[in-house]
Image (cartoon, helix red, strand yellow):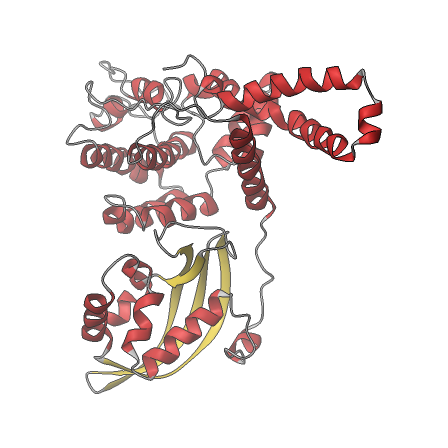
Length: 419
């Protein structure tokens, strides 16, 4: 395992490319007439210089772990580039307390919603979504004494399920992975060691690290604060990355400089899209009530939902199947039979959108008015239906409007009327 994240197999070719490019263009600069004769070389140099200017981000994960890992934060693969850059900048300027506040406050409702969205499409994690939703409410309502112990328990259980019955906090647990940012030796494995520290003396002093043994064994009595709670969510986010990477075997390979450059450019573009994403403006209830498939953009979550509800009203069960996120990758016929069993007991009479609120770059919650018959009784309800923009083949979240993605309905958000 490399000593630094920057030495990872997938990053090394780009580092080498920047070194080679820097030397090459220094040589060409001595023959400046070449740029006049060949405009493509000039453009190539301009692109190279732009990438070279951004190459400092290759050092950021190592810098982040050096500054904050001992305090309970480690760099993980989905950490916002803005948070990463700003916290390292503050830490480098000895503004550690300001950086800590930035990291703590970054664990907000938007961050937790993204965790929940990821959990819904991943084995083992999706079993715990209902509990995590309750813990989200506890966290946002500052019931830290409640959410911290259960988050620690869920983290241990998840690691146990994923790694063949070896929990997160056991001595035998191994979280280091080849060619990883999150599971680098300075990341999740290091954090696990800190959190698993022995706490043999009962203490009333406030702690800022989620010490598992001290909290769950009743030795650290003053643990219920936002910093400890936020770090538990941070660990859960890192555990998702670890589980994803663990499922993909990585081998040493000789990646060409051009491939490394392309991969790096794509990553930068994706991060820019995430950072630049903004919620759509809030519209009035009157606006939404008058929307139809004819007035909506076809790639919008609202269009997809109205299609789904119309198919339900018309009892076109086969059209419901490909719109539900949990059916992705499953046998169409078998899933349709389940849908008929669940949905046919409800006769949908009328529906319209009341409100729509973007949650993340890949999720929207749409408050919907539903009028229906069930067991010969008439019901009128307002239901908040979760819409996820996901890869059509894997079901993993994608940025809205990205290729090979579609809007899907999360059936759990309809459970109050279905089951």
